[in-house]
Length: 430
Ligand code: EPU
Image 1 (cartoon, rainbow, N blue to C red):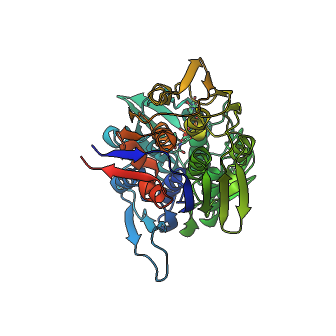
Image 2: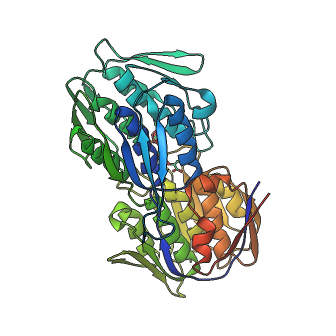
Image 3: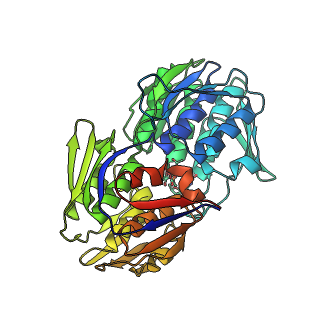
Protein backbone atom coordinates (compact mmCIF):
# COMPACT_ATOMS: atom_id res chain seq x y z
CA UNK A 1 0.00 0.00 0.00
CA UNK A 2 1.35 3.44 -0.91
CA UNK A 3 2.48 5.81 1.81
CA UNK A 4 3.44 9.47 1.89
CA UNK A 5 6.70 10.53 3.45
CA UNK A 6 7.28 14.13 4.36
CA UNK A 7 9.80 16.18 6.23
CA UNK A 8 8.21 19.16 7.92
CA UNK A 9 9.41 22.66 8.50
CA UNK A 10 9.34 24.29 5.08
CA UNK A 11 7.13 27.29 4.37
CA UNK A 12 4.75 26.94 1.44
CA UNK A 13 5.33 29.51 -1.30
CA UNK A 14 3.98 29.55 -4.85
CA UNK A 15 0.82 28.67 -6.74
CA UNK A 16 -1.58 25.75 -6.53
CA UNK A 17 -4.25 25.15 -9.17
CA UNK A 18 -7.49 24.09 -7.50
CA UNK A 19 -9.12 21.02 -9.07
CA UNK A 20 -12.78 20.42 -9.85
CA UNK A 21 -14.87 19.58 -6.79
CA UNK A 22 -15.25 15.87 -6.05
CA UNK A 23 -18.58 16.46 -4.33
CA UNK A 24 -19.95 18.31 -7.36
CA UNK A 25 -18.49 15.98 -10.00
CA UNK A 26 -20.07 12.87 -8.44
CA UNK A 27 -23.72 14.08 -8.46
CA UNK A 28 -23.22 15.74 -11.87
CA UNK A 29 -22.12 12.37 -13.25
CA UNK A 30 -25.19 10.77 -11.66
CA UNK A 31 -27.43 13.41 -13.29
CA UNK A 32 -26.46 11.94 -16.68
CA UNK A 33 -28.80 9.02 -15.88
CA UNK A 34 -31.77 11.38 -16.29
CA UNK A 35 -31.44 11.83 -20.06
CA UNK A 36 -30.89 9.66 -23.11
CA UNK A 37 -28.69 12.43 -24.55
CA UNK A 38 -25.02 13.03 -23.65
CA UNK A 39 -23.99 15.14 -20.67
CA UNK A 40 -20.55 16.70 -21.15
CA UNK A 41 -18.68 17.69 -18.00
CA UNK A 42 -15.63 19.94 -17.95
CA UNK A 43 -13.08 20.07 -15.14
CA UNK A 44 -13.71 16.59 -13.73
CA UNK A 45 -10.96 15.77 -11.21
CA UNK A 46 -8.88 12.58 -11.59
CA UNK A 47 -9.84 10.82 -8.40
CA UNK A 48 -10.45 7.28 -7.22
CA UNK A 49 -14.07 8.18 -6.30
CA UNK A 50 -14.72 9.42 -9.85
CA UNK A 51 -13.32 6.14 -11.23
CA UNK A 52 -15.49 4.15 -8.85
CA UNK A 53 -18.63 6.02 -9.91
CA UNK A 54 -17.69 5.44 -13.56
CA UNK A 55 -17.86 1.69 -12.85
CA UNK A 56 -21.28 2.06 -11.26
CA UNK A 57 -22.67 4.16 -14.10
CA UNK A 58 -21.24 1.76 -16.70
CA UNK A 59 -23.07 -1.05 -14.95
CA UNK A 60 -26.33 0.88 -15.57
CA UNK A 61 -25.38 1.21 -19.26
CA UNK A 62 -23.82 4.68 -19.38
CA UNK A 63 -21.21 5.16 -22.13
CA UNK A 64 -18.32 7.18 -20.79
CA UNK A 65 -15.62 8.93 -22.82
CA UNK A 66 -12.65 10.97 -21.64
CA UNK A 67 -11.53 13.63 -24.11
CA UNK A 68 -7.95 14.70 -24.71
CA UNK A 69 -6.47 17.95 -23.58
CA UNK A 70 -7.22 20.92 -25.83
CA UNK A 71 -4.36 22.68 -27.58
CA UNK A 72 -2.90 25.34 -25.30
CA UNK A 73 -4.69 23.91 -22.29
CA UNK A 74 -2.49 23.69 -19.21
CA UNK A 75 -1.35 20.36 -17.90
CA UNK A 76 -3.29 19.47 -14.79
CA UNK A 77 -6.53 20.98 -16.07
CA UNK A 78 -9.50 18.76 -15.19
CA UNK A 79 -10.79 16.12 -17.55
CA UNK A 80 -13.49 16.68 -20.15
CA UNK A 81 -15.81 13.72 -20.06
CA UNK A 82 -19.02 12.66 -21.78
CA UNK A 83 -21.64 10.54 -20.03
CA UNK A 84 -24.24 9.09 -22.36
CA UNK A 85 -27.08 7.09 -20.85
CA UNK A 86 -28.86 6.29 -24.13
CA UNK A 87 -30.33 3.13 -22.60
CA UNK A 88 -30.43 2.15 -18.96
CA UNK A 89 -29.69 -1.57 -19.16
CA UNK A 90 -29.83 -2.35 -15.44
CA UNK A 91 -31.66 -0.54 -12.63
CA UNK A 92 -29.82 -2.44 -9.90
CA UNK A 93 -26.84 -0.89 -8.12
CA UNK A 94 -25.15 -3.89 -6.49
CA UNK A 95 -23.67 -4.12 -3.02
CA UNK A 96 -20.05 -4.62 -4.11
CA UNK A 97 -20.12 -1.31 -6.03
CA UNK A 98 -22.29 0.83 -3.70
CA UNK A 99 -20.57 -0.26 -0.49
CA UNK A 100 -17.28 1.32 -1.65
CA UNK A 101 -18.72 4.82 -1.94
CA UNK A 102 -21.74 6.25 -0.24
CA UNK A 103 -22.62 8.80 -2.94
CA UNK A 104 -23.38 5.96 -5.36
CA UNK A 105 -26.63 5.42 -3.43
CA UNK A 106 -27.82 8.68 -5.01
CA UNK A 107 -28.42 6.90 -8.35
CA UNK A 108 -31.75 5.84 -6.82
CA UNK A 109 -33.27 9.27 -7.63
CA UNK A 110 -32.64 9.42 -11.38
CA UNK A 111 -33.22 5.67 -11.91
CA UNK A 112 -36.60 5.86 -10.25
CA UNK A 113 -37.54 9.05 -12.10
CA UNK A 114 -36.55 7.79 -15.54
CA UNK A 115 -37.09 4.01 -15.34
CA UNK A 116 -39.80 4.03 -12.64
CA UNK A 117 -37.90 1.40 -10.66
CA UNK A 118 -34.59 1.00 -8.88
CA UNK A 119 -32.91 -1.59 -6.69
CA UNK A 120 -30.00 -0.03 -4.86
CA UNK A 121 -27.90 -1.60 -2.14
CA UNK A 122 -28.02 0.15 1.23
CA UNK A 123 -24.69 1.96 1.59
CA UNK A 124 -24.19 0.96 5.21
CA UNK A 125 -22.28 2.91 7.81
CA UNK A 126 -18.84 4.36 7.41
CA UNK A 127 -15.93 5.55 9.48
CA UNK A 128 -17.40 9.00 10.22
CA UNK A 129 -20.83 7.93 11.43
CA UNK A 130 -23.85 5.68 10.91
CA UNK A 131 -25.11 7.76 7.98
CA UNK A 132 -28.69 6.45 7.59
CA UNK A 133 -30.85 6.91 4.46
CA UNK A 134 -34.18 7.70 6.12
CA UNK A 135 -34.36 11.19 4.58
CA UNK A 136 -33.94 9.79 1.06
CA UNK A 137 -36.68 7.22 1.64
CA UNK A 138 -39.00 9.82 3.16
CA UNK A 139 -38.53 12.13 0.16
CA UNK A 140 -38.99 9.41 -2.45
CA UNK A 141 -42.14 8.16 -0.70
CA UNK A 142 -43.55 11.70 -0.75
CA UNK A 143 -43.07 11.64 -4.54
CA UNK A 144 -45.24 8.52 -4.62
CA UNK A 145 -42.62 5.77 -4.59
CA UNK A 146 -43.32 2.46 -2.95
CA UNK A 147 -40.29 1.30 -1.01
CA UNK A 148 -39.29 -2.07 0.39
CA UNK A 149 -36.08 -3.18 1.99
CA UNK A 150 -35.15 -6.60 0.63
CA UNK A 151 -31.93 -8.47 1.48
CA UNK A 152 -29.99 -5.28 2.07
CA UNK A 153 -31.40 -3.51 -0.98
CA UNK A 154 -33.78 -0.59 -1.22
CA UNK A 155 -36.34 -1.63 -3.81
CA UNK A 156 -38.24 1.41 -5.07
CA UNK A 157 -41.11 1.57 -7.53
CA UNK A 158 -42.80 4.66 -8.93
CA UNK A 159 -46.58 4.72 -9.38
CA UNK A 160 -47.99 4.00 -12.84
CA UNK A 161 -47.06 6.97 -15.03
CA UNK A 162 -44.08 7.91 -12.86
CA UNK A 163 -43.27 9.94 -9.75
CA UNK A 164 -45.65 12.69 -8.70
CA UNK A 165 -44.62 16.14 -7.45
CA UNK A 166 -45.12 16.86 -3.74
CA UNK A 167 -43.85 18.97 -0.87
CA UNK A 168 -40.80 17.40 0.80
CA UNK A 169 -39.88 19.03 4.10
CA UNK A 170 -36.61 17.65 5.38
CA UNK A 171 -36.41 17.56 9.19
CA UNK A 172 -32.60 17.81 8.88
CA UNK A 173 -30.37 19.28 6.17
CA UNK A 174 -28.85 16.57 3.98
CA UNK A 175 -26.67 17.18 0.94
CA UNK A 176 -27.25 13.72 -0.55
CA UNK A 177 -31.00 13.64 0.06
CA UNK A 178 -31.34 17.11 -1.50
CA UNK A 179 -29.39 16.03 -4.62
CA UNK A 180 -31.47 12.87 -4.92
CA UNK A 181 -34.93 14.39 -4.49
CA UNK A 182 -34.01 17.33 -6.73
CA UNK A 183 -32.98 14.96 -9.52
CA UNK A 184 -36.02 12.74 -9.03
CA UNK A 185 -38.38 15.73 -9.09
CA UNK A 186 -37.16 16.98 -12.48
CA UNK A 187 -39.07 14.17 -14.24
CA UNK A 188 -42.01 13.89 -11.80
CA UNK A 189 -45.50 14.97 -12.83
CA UNK A 190 -46.38 18.33 -11.31
CA UNK A 191 -44.61 20.55 -8.83
CA UNK A 192 -42.22 19.51 -6.07
CA UNK A 193 -41.22 21.86 -3.28
CA UNK A 194 -38.11 20.86 -1.30
CA UNK A 195 -38.06 22.66 2.05
CA UNK A 196 -35.00 22.82 4.29
CA UNK A 197 -32.86 21.92 1.26
CA UNK A 198 -29.08 21.90 1.52
CA UNK A 199 -27.59 25.09 0.04
CA UNK A 200 -24.05 23.85 -0.58
CA UNK A 201 -22.42 25.26 -3.76
CA UNK A 202 -22.35 21.68 -5.11
CA UNK A 203 -26.18 21.61 -4.95
CA UNK A 204 -26.26 24.82 -6.98
CA UNK A 205 -23.82 23.35 -9.52
CA UNK A 206 -26.12 20.34 -9.96
CA UNK A 207 -29.32 22.43 -10.04
CA UNK A 208 -27.82 24.65 -12.76
CA UNK A 209 -26.78 21.54 -14.70
CA UNK A 210 -30.34 20.22 -14.48
CA UNK A 211 -31.66 23.57 -15.75
CA UNK A 212 -29.19 23.38 -18.66
CA UNK A 213 -30.67 19.92 -19.36
CA UNK A 214 -34.17 21.42 -19.54
CA UNK A 215 -35.37 21.11 -15.93
CA UNK A 216 -37.54 23.85 -14.43
CA UNK A 217 -36.13 24.79 -11.02
CA UNK A 218 -36.50 27.98 -9.00
CA UNK A 219 -35.01 29.00 -5.65
CA UNK A 220 -31.53 27.72 -6.59
CA UNK A 221 -29.06 28.55 -3.79
CA UNK A 222 -31.83 28.98 -1.19
CA UNK A 223 -33.39 26.68 1.41
CA UNK A 224 -36.48 26.11 -0.72
CA UNK A 225 -36.20 24.56 -4.17
CA UNK A 226 -39.26 24.42 -6.42
CA UNK A 227 -39.23 22.00 -9.33
CA UNK A 228 -41.82 21.82 -12.08
CA UNK A 229 -41.50 18.36 -13.59
CA UNK A 230 -40.92 17.98 -17.34
CA UNK A 231 -41.44 15.01 -19.70
CA UNK A 232 -37.83 14.67 -20.74
CA UNK A 233 -34.39 16.16 -20.15
CA UNK A 234 -31.83 16.70 -22.90
CA UNK A 235 -28.04 16.81 -23.14
CA UNK A 236 -25.93 19.71 -21.88
CA UNK A 237 -22.37 20.87 -21.26
CA UNK A 238 -21.52 21.89 -17.72
CA UNK A 239 -18.40 22.87 -15.80
CA UNK A 240 -17.58 21.37 -12.39
CA UNK A 241 -16.99 24.12 -9.81
CA UNK A 242 -13.57 24.39 -8.11
CA UNK A 243 -13.20 22.28 -4.99
CA UNK A 244 -13.86 24.47 -1.93
CA UNK A 245 -12.63 21.76 0.44
CA UNK A 246 -9.34 21.41 -1.43
CA UNK A 247 -9.10 25.23 -1.35
CA UNK A 248 -9.69 25.34 2.41
CA UNK A 249 -7.24 22.49 2.97
CA UNK A 250 -4.37 24.25 1.19
CA UNK A 251 -5.29 27.54 2.87
CA UNK A 252 -4.98 25.85 6.25
CA UNK A 253 -1.72 24.18 5.24
CA UNK A 254 -0.24 27.57 4.29
CA UNK A 255 -1.60 29.12 7.51
CA UNK A 256 0.15 26.40 9.46
CA UNK A 257 3.55 26.41 7.75
CA UNK A 258 3.61 30.13 7.01
CA UNK A 259 4.40 31.46 3.55
CA UNK A 260 2.46 32.88 0.63
CA UNK A 261 0.36 30.75 -1.70
CA UNK A 262 -1.97 31.69 -4.54
CA UNK A 263 -4.83 29.18 -4.85
CA UNK A 264 -5.60 29.51 -8.54
CA UNK A 265 -9.22 29.31 -9.61
CA UNK A 266 -10.52 29.22 -6.01
CA UNK A 267 -13.95 30.75 -5.40
CA UNK A 268 -13.72 32.46 -1.95
CA UNK A 269 -17.51 32.92 -1.75
CA UNK A 270 -17.85 29.12 -1.60
CA UNK A 271 -15.99 28.93 1.73
CA UNK A 272 -16.45 32.35 3.28
CA UNK A 273 -17.14 31.05 6.78
CA UNK A 274 -13.90 29.05 6.79
CA UNK A 275 -11.97 32.04 5.44
CA UNK A 276 -13.45 34.27 8.18
CA UNK A 277 -12.22 31.77 10.77
CA UNK A 278 -8.78 31.64 9.18
CA UNK A 279 -8.59 35.43 9.16
CA UNK A 280 -9.27 35.39 12.91
CA UNK A 281 -6.27 33.05 13.39
CA UNK A 282 -4.07 35.81 11.98
CA UNK A 283 -3.86 34.58 8.37
CA UNK A 284 -4.13 37.18 5.61
CA UNK A 285 -6.51 36.25 2.80
CA UNK A 286 -6.84 38.30 -0.33
CA UNK A 287 -9.20 37.72 -3.25
CA UNK A 288 -7.39 38.22 -6.54
CA UNK A 289 -8.62 38.14 -10.10
CA UNK A 290 -7.42 34.55 -10.61
CA UNK A 291 -7.93 33.11 -7.16
CA UNK A 292 -7.28 33.48 -3.46
CA UNK A 293 -3.96 34.47 -1.88
CA UNK A 294 -3.14 33.05 1.55
CA UNK A 295 -0.34 34.59 3.52
CA UNK A 296 1.01 34.24 7.01
CA UNK A 297 4.25 35.63 8.31
CA UNK A 298 6.13 34.45 11.40
CA UNK A 299 3.46 35.62 13.86
CA UNK A 300 1.74 33.09 16.08
CA UNK A 301 -1.53 31.32 15.19
CA UNK A 302 -4.38 32.69 17.27
CA UNK A 303 -6.84 30.14 18.74
CA UNK A 304 -10.40 30.32 17.38
CA UNK A 305 -13.51 28.33 18.39
CA UNK A 306 -15.55 26.75 15.61
CA UNK A 307 -18.84 24.84 15.20
CA UNK A 308 -19.35 22.85 12.00
CA UNK A 309 -22.68 23.53 10.26
CA UNK A 310 -24.38 23.03 6.92
CA UNK A 311 -23.51 25.66 4.28
CA UNK A 312 -23.05 28.61 4.68
CA UNK A 313 -21.59 27.50 8.03
CA UNK A 314 -18.12 26.11 8.65
CA UNK A 315 -17.88 22.82 6.66
CA UNK A 316 -17.46 19.52 8.48
CA UNK A 317 -15.12 18.53 5.63
CA UNK A 318 -12.60 21.11 6.91
CA UNK A 319 -12.92 20.26 10.60
CA UNK A 320 -9.96 17.86 10.75
CA UNK A 321 -7.69 20.23 8.84
CA UNK A 322 -8.63 23.12 11.10
CA UNK A 323 -7.96 20.98 14.15
CA UNK A 324 -4.45 20.30 12.81
CA UNK A 325 -3.91 24.06 12.56
CA UNK A 326 -5.18 24.64 16.10
CA UNK A 327 -2.71 22.12 17.55
CA UNK A 328 -0.04 24.80 17.01
CA UNK A 329 -2.08 27.83 18.12
CA UNK A 330 -1.02 30.18 20.91
CA UNK A 331 -3.80 29.04 23.27
CA UNK A 332 -6.87 26.87 23.79
CA UNK A 333 -9.58 26.42 21.17
CA UNK A 334 -12.74 24.34 20.92
CA UNK A 335 -14.32 22.63 17.93
CA UNK A 336 -17.90 21.34 18.00
CA UNK A 337 -18.72 18.78 15.29
CA UNK A 338 -22.48 18.99 14.73
CA UNK A 339 -22.88 17.08 11.44
CA UNK A 340 -21.36 13.63 12.02
CA UNK A 341 -21.32 11.84 15.36
CA UNK A 342 -17.97 10.12 14.90
CA UNK A 343 -15.73 12.44 12.98
CA UNK A 344 -12.85 12.66 15.42
CA UNK A 345 -10.71 9.69 14.39
CA UNK A 346 -7.87 12.04 13.54
CA UNK A 347 -7.59 13.05 17.20
CA UNK A 348 -5.68 9.92 18.21
CA UNK A 349 -3.43 10.27 15.16
CA UNK A 350 -2.73 13.97 15.76
CA UNK A 351 -1.72 12.97 19.29
CA UNK A 352 1.16 10.99 17.73
CA UNK A 353 2.63 14.34 16.67
CA UNK A 354 2.45 15.42 20.31
CA UNK A 355 -0.79 17.40 19.92
CA UNK A 356 -2.84 18.02 23.06
CA UNK A 357 -6.53 17.34 22.28
CA UNK A 358 -9.34 16.04 24.47
CA UNK A 359 -12.79 15.07 23.25
CA UNK A 360 -16.01 15.23 25.22
CA UNK A 361 -19.02 14.25 23.13
CA UNK A 362 -19.31 16.66 20.21
CA UNK A 363 -16.64 19.00 21.55
CA UNK A 364 -12.88 18.76 21.06
CA UNK A 365 -10.62 21.00 23.14
CA UNK A 366 -7.24 21.70 21.64
CA UNK A 367 -4.38 23.20 23.61
CA UNK A 368 -1.90 24.61 21.17
CA UNK A 369 1.83 23.84 21.29
CA UNK A 370 4.72 25.75 19.75
CA UNK A 371 5.96 22.69 17.85
CA UNK A 372 4.75 19.25 16.69
CA UNK A 373 7.11 16.35 16.05
CA UNK A 374 6.92 14.10 12.97
CA UNK A 375 5.43 10.61 13.41
CA UNK A 376 4.12 7.45 11.72
CA UNK A 377 0.35 7.93 11.29
CA UNK A 378 -2.64 6.55 9.45
CA UNK A 379 -6.26 7.56 9.07
CA UNK A 380 -9.58 6.01 8.29
CA UNK A 381 -11.17 8.70 6.15
CA UNK A 382 -10.30 11.21 3.51
CA UNK A 383 -10.37 14.51 5.39
CA UNK A 384 -8.74 13.00 8.47
CA UNK A 385 -5.86 11.76 6.29
CA UNK A 386 -5.18 15.17 4.84
CA UNK A 387 -5.19 16.73 8.31
CA UNK A 388 -2.25 14.45 9.08
CA UNK A 389 -0.43 15.68 5.98
CA UNK A 390 -0.97 19.28 7.12
CA UNK A 391 0.33 18.47 10.60
CA UNK A 392 3.34 16.71 9.04
CA UNK A 393 4.17 19.76 6.90
CA UNK A 394 4.58 21.86 10.03
CA UNK A 395 6.05 19.20 12.34
CA UNK A 396 9.75 18.90 13.00
CA UNK A 397 11.33 15.87 11.33
CA UNK A 398 9.94 12.99 9.31
CA UNK A 399 6.30 11.93 9.03
CA UNK A 400 4.96 8.88 7.21
CA UNK A 401 1.24 8.78 6.43
CA UNK A 402 0.02 5.23 5.84
CA UNK A 403 -3.09 4.05 3.97
CA UNK A 404 -3.13 6.99 1.60
CA UNK A 405 -5.75 5.43 -0.66
CA UNK A 406 -8.13 7.62 1.32
CA UNK A 407 -6.29 10.69 0.04
CA UNK A 408 -6.47 9.47 -3.56
CA UNK A 409 -10.26 9.31 -3.24
CA UNK A 410 -10.47 13.08 -2.92
CA UNK A 411 -7.21 14.95 -3.59
CA UNK A 412 -5.75 15.21 -7.06
CA UNK A 413 -1.91 15.14 -7.23
CA UNK A 414 -1.64 16.22 -3.59
CA UNK A 415 2.07 15.60 -3.18
CA UNK A 416 2.89 17.19 -6.55
CA UNK A 417 0.91 20.35 -5.73
CA UNK A 418 2.56 20.69 -2.32
CA UNK A 419 6.10 19.91 -3.43
CA UNK A 420 5.88 22.60 -6.13
CA UNK A 421 5.35 25.05 -3.26
CA UNK A 422 8.45 23.92 -1.41
CA UNK A 423 7.17 21.04 0.72
CA UNK A 424 9.46 18.04 1.12
CA UNK A 425 6.92 15.35 0.32
CA UNK A 426 7.00 12.14 -1.70
CA UNK A 427 4.92 9.04 -2.33
CA UNK A 428 6.47 5.72 -1.35
CA UNK A 429 5.11 2.89 -3.47
CA UNK A 430 4.13 -0.52 -2.08
N1 EPU B 1 -28.50 11.99 7.52
C1 EPU B 1 -29.56 11.32 8.08
N2 EPU B 1 -30.43 10.64 7.26
C2 EPU B 1 -30.26 10.64 5.90
C3 EPU B 1 -29.18 11.35 5.32
C4 EPU B 1 -28.32 12.02 6.16
O1 EPU B 1 -29.72 11.31 9.31
O2 EPU B 1 -31.08 10.01 5.21
C5 EPU B 1 -27.57 12.70 8.40
C6 EPU B 1 -26.14 12.19 8.29
O3 EPU B 1 -25.94 11.03 9.06
C7 EPU B 1 -25.36 13.38 8.81
C8 EPU B 1 -26.17 14.57 8.30
O4 EPU B 1 -27.47 14.05 7.99
O5 EPU B 1 -25.37 13.39 10.21
C9 EPU B 1 -25.62 15.25 7.07
O6 EPU B 1 -25.29 14.30 6.10
P1 EPU B 1 -25.44 14.58 4.54
O7 EPU B 1 -26.53 13.71 4.00
O8 EPU B 1 -25.54 16.05 4.31
O9 EPU B 1 -24.04 14.06 4.00
P2 EPU B 1 -23.76 13.31 2.63
O10 EPU B 1 -24.65 13.82 1.57
O11 EPU B 1 -23.71 11.84 2.87
C10 EPU B 1 -22.00 15.01 1.76
C11 EPU B 1 -20.57 14.98 1.35
C12 EPU B 1 -19.69 14.73 2.57
C13 EPU B 1 -19.93 15.88 3.55
C14 EPU B 1 -21.42 15.96 3.90
C15 EPU B 1 -21.76 17.14 4.79
C16 EPU B 1 -20.56 14.16 -0.92
C17 EPU B 1 -20.24 13.08 -1.88
N3 EPU B 1 -20.36 13.93 0.36
O12 EPU B 1 -22.28 13.76 2.35
O13 EPU B 1 -18.35 14.75 2.14
O14 EPU B 1 -19.19 15.66 4.71
O15 EPU B 1 -22.20 16.08 2.68
O16 EPU B 1 -21.39 18.33 4.18
O17 EPU B 1 -21.00 15.23 -1.31
C18 EPU B 1 -16.10 14.07 2.04
O18 EPU B 1 -16.03 14.63 0.93
O19 EPU B 1 -15.08 13.68 2.66
C19 EPU B 1 -17.40 13.90 2.66
C20 EPU B 1 -17.63 13.04 3.66
